[in-house]
Image 1 (cartoon, chains in turn yellow, red):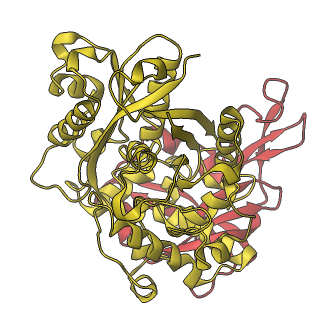
Image 2 (tube, rainbow over the protein chains, first blue to last red):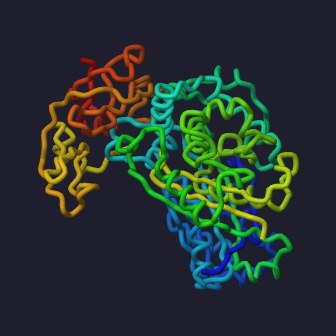
Image 3 (spheres, chains in turn purple, red):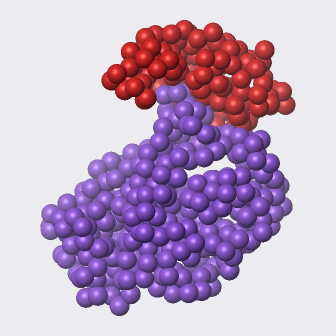
Length: 388
Length: 129
């Protein structure tokens, strides 16, 4: 296998884009990634596009071809493939791009993610997102996506005594970071009471425990490390790519509040990179709900099971803490255009490792990690990056 | 949302019928035709559950899809049947009543309907014992 590097990144601002189209968002992200990599379009060998549910959100399928076409690459006839794994679609699209380059099958590959979610009402988006879980045996019974994570939260609270304030602290921290990220949907700091006084969505999760419905696109360009210096002075090396699966339904899990797929993907990534937890300078985890970040930092091994609430409350996951978590603002503050999130996480890791993260820069960041979850933990992608 | 028609033809949805692997002794609900432990070595037979269990975890759904919005707030739970398997179902009780560990029993209920005059579909909910 060849070593692979990220040589370009691009991301739209995340938000409610009622005046912009799906293809318009994608083209902006794709073009900025290609420009960032100093590439000509015809140098691209292949594309992988993460998208969860364009069929439900904008009634468009065949996304791979659509994007190749509007990226101006239909005349080049490059292979363009849609990758779908619910909210982990982006992370898996990135992994496919890395595998393609590592194998020697391709040289320059674009991995993108895009979702346009705000053009349908809340009821339909709730229904579309419920498809990330087991539609036949969870959705049928009236399970919503926040409802499933709420059941994880209640299980966790019951067993480990997590407090309401500790859970809210995840959102406060991520909004603090997001207020320092120009692409974030919400760029305002919030307080604990903002979270604890917000509308109840599914007990115990309130509106500010949940990531929002968002439009956005992100794209990155990967290339063999040996070629990367031709395009950029700051290639970011992909030290590990890992993926794991688990049961589609939450009720079939070994442990309701441990995502075994996160544990497996994390272990595989650390093994592949030959690194330990203490080597990681920052991590972007999948905080679709505040409880998800609590589980993620435990499942990836950054603190012991049951201790993430205290760990968060003490500031260990904040900027300047022991292991800064979600310096971008996470899904919570950046917004969560489901197919794009996994790629946006890679963009943040690259910015941090290049030293270009501005007011949210982690001092001296050398090694970073991303963690992208599909559904309630049925798919997880984990990646580790280092300076090239 | 309309549900795929074949779901209404799944008898296990109405009767808490699942499956049992005679090779390793595990019970499954929802039913599986392949045991995740024994895989093709497993001998899968149908099994009717007693229909009693306990609440493993729960939530109170306050924002739902159209199909369930008239029911909000409703209690959703993961229930562990006495024989071992877990499933997701609504509880027929008030949000104040539910606790983790609460004993419950399966009851036959209407789950939803396709549109105002559409086909009604049925399934199992759980009530406190």
